[in-house]
Image (cartoon, rainbow, N blue to C red; front, side, top):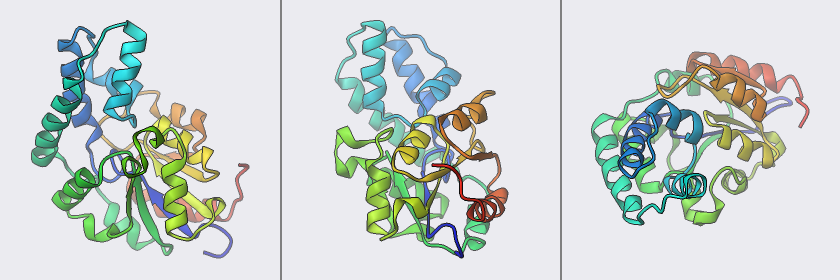
Length: 230
């Protein structure tokens, strides 16, 4: 790139694969059964981008409902089964990547095993491997909205944070990328999107928001010519 980005980092869930809606369905059912009624839509709006463990902590704090530790394992197993059967690709990713000249990697809160399974199922793994990084590999206390995984990815790719553009679908992910000193494009093209989604991503620090991967390359090129205020 001439004066812009030397690396583009993609979140995985809700950006490359349409998995957040499946997670919201599984987790809303489990929480409702545990005495915390919540809709699929509310799950997406409030908790997209958060780990299930942190969602449980948040619900326990808010509602004073002791949530069984077994819910952690139960959700993971149910979700892995659903994702393996039902996860679909976000359309347009291969074409968008073909138009972006800079290196790329994935920085996700999901485990490496789950990312590998989802990307393999939708045929996107070879587009990114081996440059796939999980915050869970760094430690349970270092997931988004903390910036650690983005800083880790940039370091692995040998690019300064200021020269990185991130594509994120969640408020927590945008906050993490901004805290890492990176610029962010918000994405609202997955099934878990909601009416105020774009506004909330912008409020969190995304410079612009797209709803189609077809628009990504043009937006990246435009932003690379314009030095946003960090």
